[in-house]
Image 1: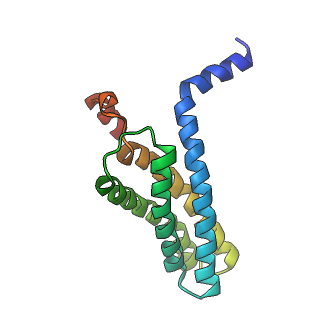
Image 2: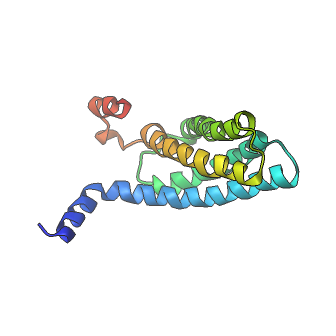
Length: 161
């Protein structure tokens, strides 16, 4: 089998996932730029604490991200209502927020690295990367569900594994 055929088969197998990751990535990139700008403005410009600065920026970005992901990334998924989806999305985002804050707290309070570079590497690079992986997986599993006929008990069990 030629390499091109192999790549086409892999793409065909994972096409939906590849498109979801790409869309999630675009929204995430916009949210990331927003988070970096707002958190730096708060922390470095207005001298707000490092965890508070990143937290405020992330809450605003997460809310905007929910609506973008609902209407673009996972528009093909079942709509289970804003009253269910948004709180769950924000709750899982809080877990992602904690994951993102851990490297900032470690850098600031354990390593005593207080420079702008250390802040941006720990929060906006390492923390955001880890938090993004968590958010994609958890949103796909628990917020934006497959249409009812595709959901089975086996699929639900597999999602937890």
